[in-house]
Length: 280
Image (cartoon, rainbow, N blue to C red; front, side, top):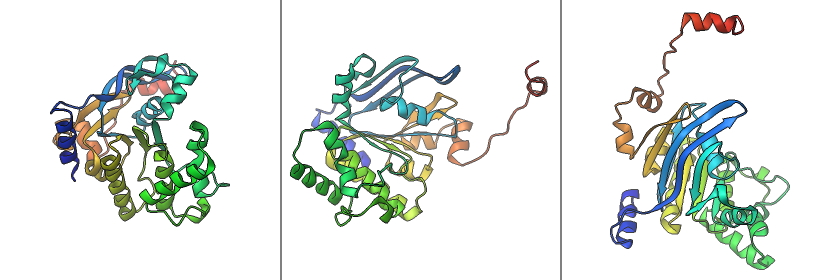
């Protein structure tokens, strides 16, 4: 089933209405020290949608992801996940919300001293009171989903880069989350393995009807999996639209990003001299 067909099916299930937002970002500002890196972001991600976040280096996409998954607190603005304002949740409320969120970090972020199956069971140990046998069964089920059924007893060092990524996905989905976040899922992978991972993301969304947010710089991958694409530029939203809308954007900066064209730096001679003189 194509991404568009799935969206039509989900809309039919809801009486033809557009899916409500699973993620709402309102007026989000973010600072690191005295430096502001996100400026008044407004964004909504619908239920069962795959939203891809793109942008050049320093655009703020990783910072936005860290705020969405609760690793950073906004300087201003609000983030609502599954109808809950994360800024108003106490520790117990945030822990409950995290049970419904999965994150596949860049590089996998698996513990090297644990087997693959033990790595996958970690969210179950943290967020549930299930017995060991049940956790083993759930971990094996998720290994089947990502085609790693024979790898549960292996160590992370024994897996290839693509296999590590899939193991990280298995850990992210072991609690059957409603929201799934990916940080650069295709980074460091060859084109064939990257394409297979894209197919896995599409299958997961179709099978589990999850809302998926993917941060990536891979243009081909983005256009393959996205229902909509958000492009950030220097901490601001430059464009939000379907892959077709983004591809046909009249924005020069958007086209530069998609076509990997470097932008010419415009240098103010007086400002340049001022910086060389140490701001004097």
